[in-house]
Length: 242
Ligand code: TMP
Image 1 (cartoon, rainbow, N blue to C red):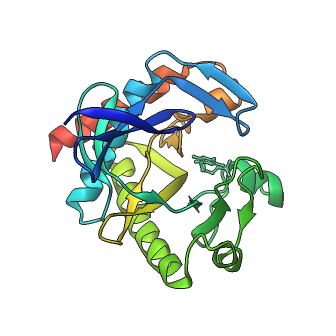
Image 2 (cartoon, rainbow, N blue to C red):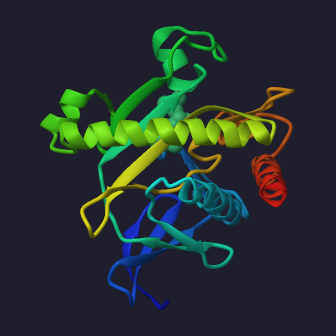
């Protein structure tokens, strides 16, 4: 598959057209940002680790029958995916309360709520990706109510699969962000990366943070790449066992 023109330049990834009209190549770089770009750094090899981790997770989701954009990892930094029109929503799932929800609602981080919490944010850098509800999403024409039903159903299935997968690796899936797109057949599919950049992942025993909070919060101890490498090692061990 030949890489052609740059279609989209994100903060941590670039998307290229290929010689196949319905396929793109996604390139993972080493940029790390937080606070809507307020904090920026280059973390050597982060893109390699995230490409690998995201590919392993997508392989599991594809095998479980979740419709996704992912085809295959091509090399250290690139993967082949379906070309999709991204729905401008970030869908956040919270199994344990942490991050912005803890701050906004006065919860102590690490509390387990009686329910799983789903949130929507409107993908808009100028507005700072504001938290919205379903009615806002429909008013913004980001999605229809029917599409939101599909998105929530898929998100719930993905959550169950990923919680079990990470638990088998000795990792708690605290929360995560998903994005969805519409493919050339008009179907909603899971898109974008799933990695320690987009998930909170805590070691089941020590509760050590193995995700981007190490960068966001300047945590001492493990470096970001050591934490991400640990996640990758455990996922690879899991893959070899099954
Ligand atoms: P939050 O607690 O900052 O709202 O983040 C919830 C989860 O979503 C966390 O795992 C990080 C992820 N996330 C992203 O991947 N991208 C984003 O832009 C935001 C706001 C959160």
